[in-house]
Structure formats: C-alpha cells, structure tokens
Length: 469
Image 1 (tube, rainbow, N blue to C red):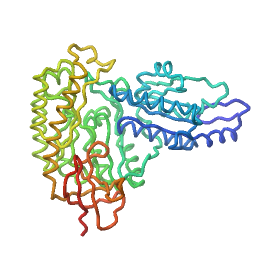
Image 2: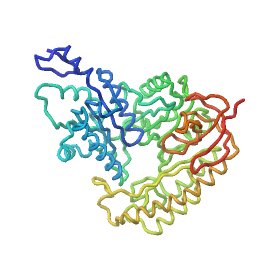
Image 3: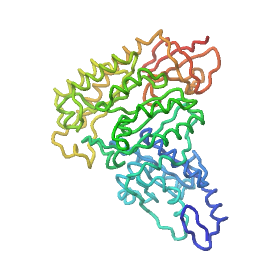
Image 4: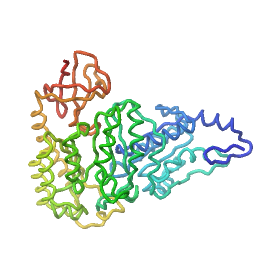
C-alpha cells in the first residue's frame, strides 16, 4: 500500500503508479488580486513542485487548474467568477479534470461556489492552502469524493515558511511579513477572511529574504495588511525597524520597500530609519481612506484629520525627497457633499505623487453594509472620477518637476516595442505606479541599477536616458 503526504491509497495503486500519476499531472494557476495573494500563489506552486507535479501556462494543456481568488470588493469578486468560469470551459475544450478554487473568495463563499458552479471540484479556504498537495492527491484515490470544501480556521502563519516558487524573473519580489488583520475598519471583510494579525518571526523572514536574494532579486517589497503593526502580537511592541535593519544586511538586496503603512502606527523611529537607511526606499504608501473626521470615525479608523495632516508634514520635513502614496474611498455611506468637498480640497493641497481611489463597495458581513445613507452607484463613481481628475493635475505637476533630474533606476526589462528599457526609481512601486522608459548607449541587464536623467513626460510615465559614465 502506498502512502504519500499522509494519503493512504487503495491496495491496487502501487508507489510506481502513484509516481506516474503525479508526474503526468500538469497544473495551471491563475493568481488574482493583490501582491499578498501572489505570495500565496507562489507558495502553492512551491509545495506542488516539491510533491512532484509539473506546471504549464497553457491552460488547454492543464490537467488541473487552480484559481487563487480575491474578494475584497465587488469588482474583484466579479473578476474571480469570470476567471473560474473561463477555467471551467477547459473541461470541455481541453484536458482539465480537476478545478480548484482557493483564496479569499473561496473562504468567503465556500459553500456557494460548490453549489452555484458545479464544475468546481474542490474549494480551499485561506487557512488550508498548505494542504493543496494532500488535497490534490485525494482526488486520485479510488471513489474519491467530489465537490469538496477544505476550510480550516485561518489562524496560522507558518505556511509562509513553505517552499515558494517564483512566478517570474523580475528583479523584485514581495515578501509577506504577516498574515491577517486586527484593524476593524467597518468597510473591510479581510479580518473575517484572513483572521487576526499574525507576525512571522524575524528569523523566518530573513531566511526567505536570503533565498530571494540568491534567486537574483534586488528589491524586496515587504507586504502585509499593515506592515507597521509588525511585531506587536509577538513582542508587545513594533519591531518593523529592527526587521528592516536585519534585511538590510542580506547580501544582494539593494532596495527595501514598504506596503502598506497605516498612519496611526508610523512612529518617529520608522521615519528616522527611512531617512538614514540607504537601502530603504524613501516611499510611504499610507492608506488614509478619507480626511473627514466624521467619515473616518464611521469607517472605524483611529486617526483624525489633524493627525493625518501633521503626520504628512512631519514625514516631508524629516525625509527630503520622500514620495507619498495613498488610497481613498469615495462615497462611503453617509458621505455628504461637504465631506466629499473636504476630501477634494485635501487631495488638491496634499499633492500625493501617487493616489488610488475606490468607489465604496457594499460588502456583506461588514458593519458598513448595514449603515444608513448608502449612495447610488452613479454618485459614488462620479465622486471617484472627480478625485482622479484632481490627482491627474497633481501628477502632471509632480512629473514636470522631475524633468532634468537624475534618479537611480532599477531595470525591470525591455518594453514591448523592443526600443526602450523599462525601469523604476525609488519613487515607483512595481505594478501600481507609472514607470520610466529609458534608452541607453550601452546594453543593460535586468536588475541593473543605473542613473537615469528624466527628459520628458509621457502621460503618467516618464522618459529618460541612462547616464553612462
């Protein structure tokens, strides 16, 4: 009788047959949502590789497709459903025999997915993704059950220590330093999907940082639902600065970037570390969500308008050249014209280099869902668009101020036209911010950091040339 990953097989399935089954299974994976979800996807790939599975990016050739979903807002849920249905079609047009849905949407709607989309064979919640190799092997047992749900309570963090298979050859990588969230913002479903905030140990994080550096990653982007909370649950005090200093010692890592810093936990020690540490990008992503005290209170945020304005002023004063990014929610329940105008004025005056804004999404299971004063979708979208128009003016001013200046720029690759290189300075986070298109008199390698002079602006992006000494 064979036994792999604790799965007891029928007597007529030998170890050799099992090995053939494993090695012939080709797996395709769809990763949706945020960088934190991408880390989970790479862990799923790593654990499956250790189990002996192969992978394919051609879904028509896949025996198994795993869809790692997001469910933060309505648009993310819609994208997830479309991706699941697209994958399900390969049961008719390709080789697909097993469709697995995991991630936040799987945690949130585990029973509904099985009921409404019968093509889905297995649903795996966020507390069980480390079990996917075991679960997949169960699918090969004789008389294996179908349409199964695996959803342990999301209360662990040690799954982040498992093998991780990089999904790309880019010079940066996301490193998840914690899981879950203990902030109870009234609009957010994440705590119920991911559990309370759990920090990894510093030793665990450093091991992964070293492994990423050995793979050639030059930029490490620390991610969590709130990186500024790192260490509170383990030590009773923040340890983010200590963690940054330890990562800075890892050979091969040139840049460290932080996503996301809640304003209430940004302290003087972190500001000073960003000022003096040459490896820590002078870039704060601070999701403030609103500026009206009344709306902030309704959102369950701990800060106030005065605190936020003073914090931004302190950061700019102490860190010359710092770049600030934020995210906002327009059309929260009860948001009046006065509240909205206050937010617009704040955006005009604050001149964020980068800003994202969401139209409020009414999410079941959140306190805000039952609040009075929900606004029509058309009003929420109009307010979102109005803020983005204001921000476009800010971006134009900011980009114009950069013309003629020289920035150290990391090369992410070559543009689709084959003429320009694509890079980023400390002022641009990959995948969410604009990029720098540049030319060079000498060939450049992916991951190389070179000085680039900004020559002009192309929409939100910048165009420059490498300064070859």
